[in-house]
Amino acid sequence: MNVKKTACQVALLFVAFTVILVGALTDFAESIKPSEILRDPAAFDGKHVMISRTVQNVIPKTSRKDNDYETFDLCDASGVRVFTWGHPDLREGQHLSVSGTFDAVKHVGA
Image (cartoon, rainbow, N blue to C red; front, side, top):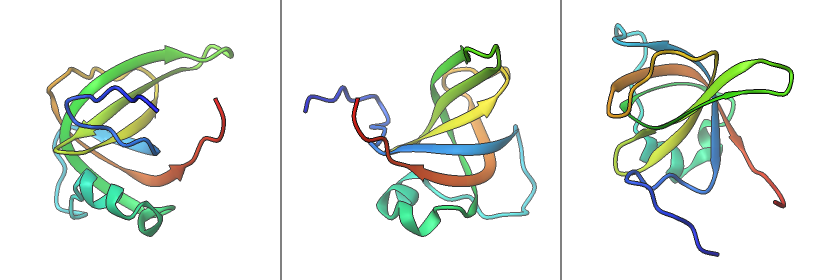
């Protein structure tokens, strides 16, 4: 299997978040590194987490039912894919904190 590597080496496991996007968060939760989540995704599945990292690979989309959404990666040495409804004003290289429920999703087939 030939996989293109991004600068943040996004894991093959698609990670989805229901997120609250905030530019600066107060200390209501400790930030977790993407590498910690990717080391043991099952340990975080269904749990509330906060990640503060660099935004990469912003992809705005609209569903067939005309619902706007975006996916993007939050990266350090590793990265997690984030999903959010709407088209928030995100920029490549921006430092961002997200807080939400982590869902480890496995896709089977093409």
